Length: 100
Image 1 (cartoon, rainbow, N blue to C red):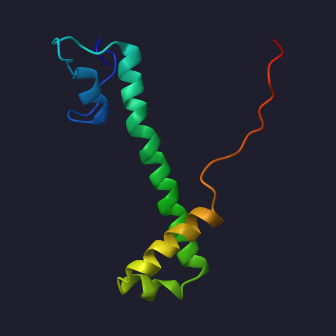
Image 2: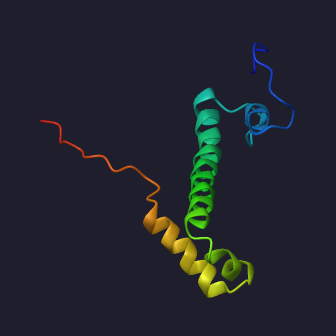
């Protein structure tokens, strides 16, 4: 991106991160820029999974649509909790301790 070999839309997150200057007025190192970009991508991806799972839940249980539309805060919160419970957002992986 910085070398000009890749073109990205002006004002995009990647463009802004690559052109960002720190307090000293220097560009971020590639490693720091990558970390900052991941700090945007991770929650965006998590939210997109939650929205997709919410849509799937409403497809399976359409009777909840009207109650959600009513704006009943307690039900909306309960629905969100049930989506997170029913559709786990993370895969669990077993870890094995390394021999040291």
